[in-house]
Structure formats: C-alpha cells, structure tokens
Image (cartoon, helix red, strand yellow):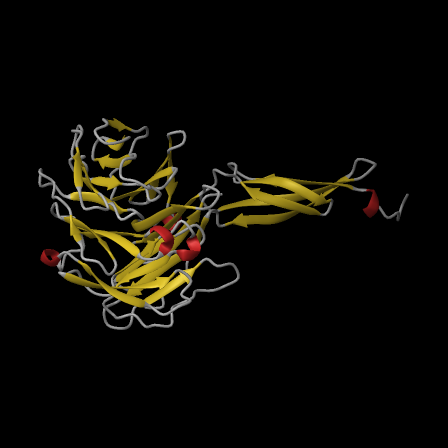
Length: 388
C-alpha cells in the first residue's frame, strides 16, 4: 500500500554493459556486493557500466549505475629518479622488476619493484654514473637469485657488481672479460645464471658483431669458445648452472662448451640467415629447442642438435628483439609484442600501452606459468604486463 517500505522486498541483480569481453561478474557474495573479474583475453584499458537493478513484487523496477574502469593488465612503474636517463636497463622474475637508470653524470639508480605493500627499494651502495646494464642471475630458488650490474663500458676487463635480489647485503664487485675491440659498441651481449647450489655466478659474453664468445665463472679465468667456422655472429648465448655454455649463431649453428672445456659444433643449414635468436631462459642444457627470427619468414624453431628448422605459425612483422620463456616466444615489433604460446602454438598480438613504441623488454613467467613482461617505451616509461 501507499507508504509501505519496499526495500526489503526487492530482488537485486547486477549486470555489466560494455563492448567486447573485458569484464565478467564472477561472484555475488551478498545481494549488495559483487566481484568483477578481468577476462583472460583483456590486454588494454577499458570502461564499462555496472548496473544494479531492483525488481519489486508488483513488477516495478529501479536501477542505479556505476562507472567501471580498469587499466587492464598493464601497470606503469614510477618515473625514473634521474630526469632524462640515457640508459634504462631492466630485469624481471616471477614477482619483481629491477630498473637501472643512468645519465653518465650522476650516480646511477637501481630500483626494485613488485613486493606487495612496498614502494621502490634501492641498495645502500651508490652506483657509478657510467653503469650501463642490469641482469638477473637466476637460481632455481628465487630467494638465492642475484642482480648483476655492469659498472663500466665494455673493454678487455669489464667491472661488474652483484647484489642479492632483495638488496639485503652490500654489493660484491668483480671483473669479467669483455669486448675490447667494441668498447663503444652496444651490441655486446651477456647472460647470467647462478651456479649449482647458488654458490657463484656463471656468465656468457659475446661480441655480437663477430663470432667471439666465452664462458666465465666469477673469480675464474674466462674459457674462450671455439669460434664458428663460418665466422658469422652470435644471435644468443647462455650459461648453465653446471658450468657449461652454448652459443647460437646466425647460420643456425650451435656451439656447446661443456664444463670440462671441451667443445662440440652442431649444424643444420636453415633456409635463411637468422637475424635474432632465443635460447629459453629456463633451459637447463644446451641440447633442447632453440628459436630464431628470419626477416620475411617469421619465427622458427629447431628441436635439438642437427634437427631441421621449422617455421612457426602466425604472421610476424619486423622484430627488433626475441626472447623465449618456458611456454612463450616473445618478439618486439614497434607498438606491439608478438606472442606465441608454445604449448599450443597459438600466436597473438599484445599492443603496448598508451599507443607507445617499444625500445626494449625482458620477459619471464610467474609461478602459475603466466607471462610477465617489462617493456621500456621510447618515451622512457616502463610498463609491466602480467597475464590475467
């Protein structure tokens, strides 16, 4: 009747009005509460309208709306503490991101992001202004991983420093072999890994403009690999925890250097010269699948020594960098990342945020096998993608 209280008699229902499949209602723990979930395919920011409709016993309805927004799967790191860094280098693991910023005139800044409830953290030890790169020396136990910083330019002897991944202890400095003939060339490459038991650090280094590469344990003399008979340059190389290493050449050749300093060469002539190569970061030996990129052809794979090269599915634009994780192949192509899910060979394109152009990236996976990527855009901003 007139004046009756209808609040307790209404049936409440939630709905979402949107374009695409950005969000879904995944739970209503109470009639006045709702849980919203991002669709697994959502990669960009989106806006939608959330509507609560009350239906009364006599058939009348009343609705209220709320805007629903999400930044999507991308998050932006705070701007670098150095205003206009000339060097921005990234490392990433399953939960954290490290960023090195340097301008050559003031102490470089190394920051760690990603620990829940905590802002950026920096080590207590100041870094020299000429610091130019940061890498993760991963261990099977992430708590034992180390962060390695290059403290000077390439040369016959290159200074490095390492921190534990949490910055809990002082920096330990050491020297590694470098590309003396390319001291001003940024094409020298590096990879790091913690040795078995996490007691030390192994590295591979290479001069990407020729066939030179080597393996070295911190505190031990570098072991020079047999150069490729073809004289072609390295497209990727990787050390392993047991002290062995492998180099991957633009011809498709792989050269293996075992812990005892003996070497083997494995060939399979591919249909075109490799412009990029990717040895999976999770590889534990040099005899597994290697990936490459060939301009005009696309991404390719060879499943082992002397195994043929096979072109992978998906149209691939011009790539400037290629990385492989356990389950994904990731390539950088201007404003997008080209992704290939290796479990089902399903290709997809991940647009970068803010209509940005990518300058560099580092990729990994989390404990659930989801892809994580830290991308530096050409405007200097750094964004992190966490697969929903």
